[in-house]
Image 1: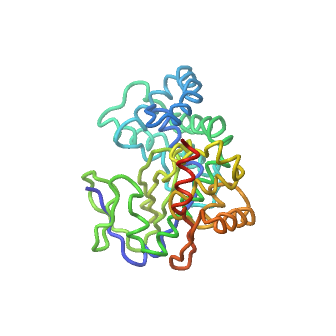
Image 2 (image 1 turned 45 degrees about the horizontal axis):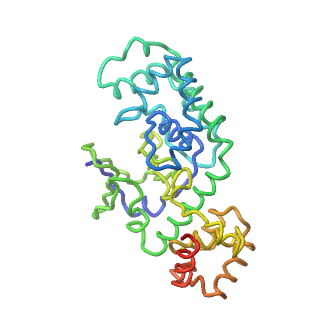
Image 3 (image 1 turned 90 degrees about the vertical axis):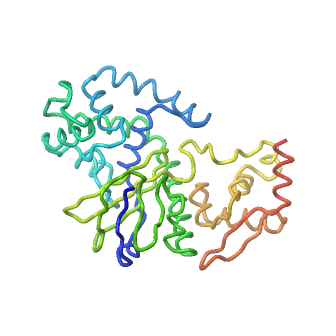
Length: 321
């Protein structure tokens, strides 16, 4: 299994960051793999994959690059530069575009497990990869970015709450398939048989993305390591229970949406991030739900978490029926 030796200081300084490039790369990976896992994701694929397939059909060299660099068990390192946070998509993309051709070919050879096909024996691979990533960002991700960002922010808030309540072992629980805290300062990052890495004194970041994709990356020279992982909410919000029309008419769509989101305990900050409503609006909805006996609250460390009561569960079942 692949694991990292993470001392207490490195782990304590670990942080969650947003990366627009990681979100775009994960979206590209999802488009390439084309295996929706639920009906809502199928609708997303139906909306975006035809244009993506046409884009690659017009550019066979880039299509081969994607199949080799993103389609297998190993992702080409130059396609996934380690995020730093607080930079723009263009700044992150520049790191891909400025990769040397030799390094790009070397990374792809690792993915291929040997010599590259003739279609990849060229010097413009970084520029082609950057061009496709920019296309995915502009056509697919950017128009949907406000919603995606709310999901990512909600994920960060939820993990921060877990961190404050149960430490890193709780925050890392079920973050990514194959990831778990092993004890003895060891973090298993995936189930593959890779040599362990020593992270003492390194920067460790966790990068949530909305597609169901994930990977690890590192910049050995900068001593920076990243875990890119899928948010607990689905890319198309499919894991979020739908608001029954009748419940929306009874409570109002916004308040009903808050109630539906209380399928597990959530903080006000998390609800603001997930709904896109203002703090005052969410607070008023929660007060009404509390007064009506449809929501309860409890303190967890420094946070106050809200949850649905049994009366709310009965109401939801009746209105969904």
